[in-house]
Image 1 (cartoon, rainbow over the protein chains, first blue to last red):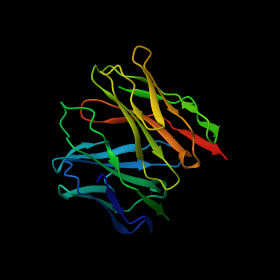
Image 2: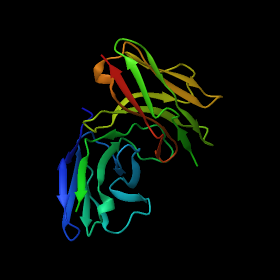
Image 3: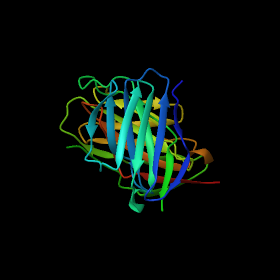
Length: 117
Length: 113
């Protein structure tokens, strides 16, 4: 089973709202990722969690706050977003986040389409 | 720094025909992997095929195969017997130590019935 699930599928929020995106995988993967994808563009990496610890933050604004409560769950908390943050947010996971071992395939969820009004 | 380039923003193919999507990359790593992902209108990124750079043999997955030219840093995807369900955005990607993926700009494939 190579399934990564994401909820909700769609989200509309105002600039003063607080919302959260959720990602879940039950493949025993120890690395999880958040990507942002604008229309007709490739995904852009936001955060990487390795063994439930934040290992990479690609200079993402603080209005995006990731959280990894356990090895299967990854959340992205949203607060005071801007209209330009409207995008598809993709979660992915891979088996081994070791910096020595490369080539671990990342498996993606279906994404959350976010619209900020 | 790695770069991945897909020079064809759009391609079209007749159903049942063969199409090749181009990808070139640049990396200073000696150990790396290459991927093709498919993203249909449903949005989910689906792994199509994966190639280990240390392997000379080209990867194949059913109707999908790659032409990996390591010296030329080229990694093209061939889709045989194209089907309507193959219509999607295709992203070429390279990863390295730390499993960071670098994506190309994507190629939109249209399949004509």
